[in-house]
Figure 1 (cartoon, rainbow, N blue to C red):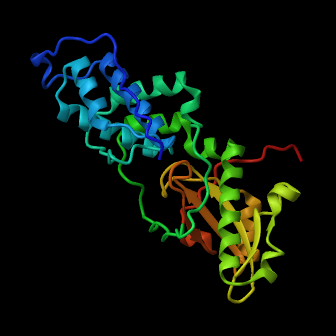
Figure 2: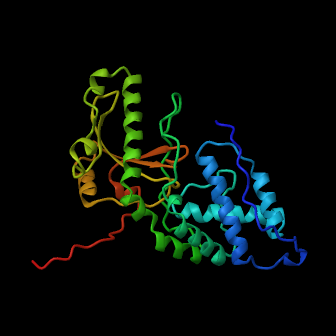
Length: 293
């Protein structure tokens, strides 16, 4: 890790005002905190060291709120970013127990003015030599988690699943990560015979096959038709599944695998879904074809 330490966002320091305790945060205060949160997040994703306490104290000095109040507000920002499918600061666990109207508006303003926040620059993604990126898949829940309405509105506006689906660079990075994982898996198992036939189908032939990577089970040699779905967000972020991909999962249930790559920007992990997919995720139709014949 590089040891370049950033300075917190300062300027326009105001006098600390004890009377603001217990009052609602103003738009200006929320804007200051959100900008500082993204400044810290940028350093974390670039693998540069920074000191959270320095940032927190600078915000306290600037707006006059208590350190505890600022700390909790950072955690509220994490809760919103998690639902938006964006990376978050790992030191601030999501806390959805708050009034989110003014804060989500501040996050909305920041994202509208900073396009790079949606596609942050990151260090090249590659599996660590001794790291197993596979984790258990999330449990299928009968109902969605309770999410405050202001966050729901923001999610509907920015639609993280649609955004991920449109982001071809994100998809390619996820596929490249999985390809390297599969190469390492076959090489470690001594299956150079199978490694020769490993193929990045979507990159060589284009989309349309219903899967992205042709790989193999290192023990049995059976084919694996791997469809990769990547996100910089959390494991439970929704994603789009095409009609072709869903059909292939039913036609080739023993061979089809869906690899969900998440947290791609910082510390990528993978969980695997096997057909029937409807037993692992809630499948909801979202588009229709309009035609005249």
